[in-house]
Image (tube, rainbow, N blue to C red; front, top):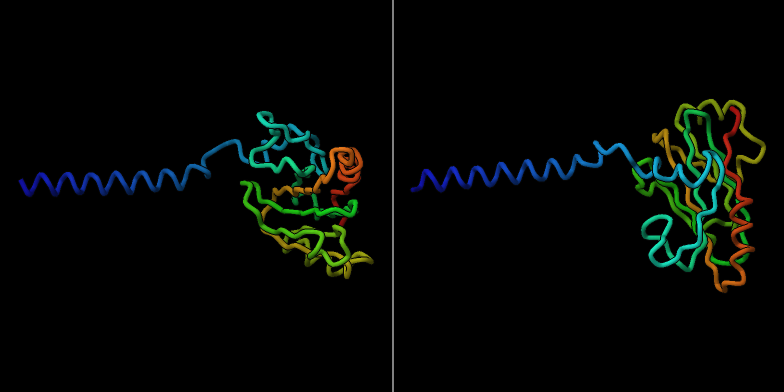
Length: 182
């Protein structure tokens, strides 16, 4: 009787460990990650304005319907990426994500200093090369160093009135996301 109970307990513990390991490893084995899913919204290395968030037809999960959104996918294998945007005087936020969709950096208009987006995203080796010949405005840029070769940026702007949506979408569409030649 005790022997059977120990075998059952051991089997349950082993099953629990296998279950936990499987759940933790699932994201590493999936072939469609967040970076790949964003491909349908437009080309790489440019901000693509997402469709308006409507109940039941959200372009991406968990988007705020009171905001307008633009995303830019990029690969740092093609060089550092420069991000610039000037948005209307409304609340806006910026987030940088790794390939899996995990936030690696985030800020908003109130923490940006000048109220605009001016950023450079690069790898450690690209930063070393860039220090030899820095761009003239390097001092005014937020420099983000990352080990993630594939990343994406999301720019969000609050739409206080539906009549302002077109103006905000145009500003998001003018945002710059381009590779810097090193």
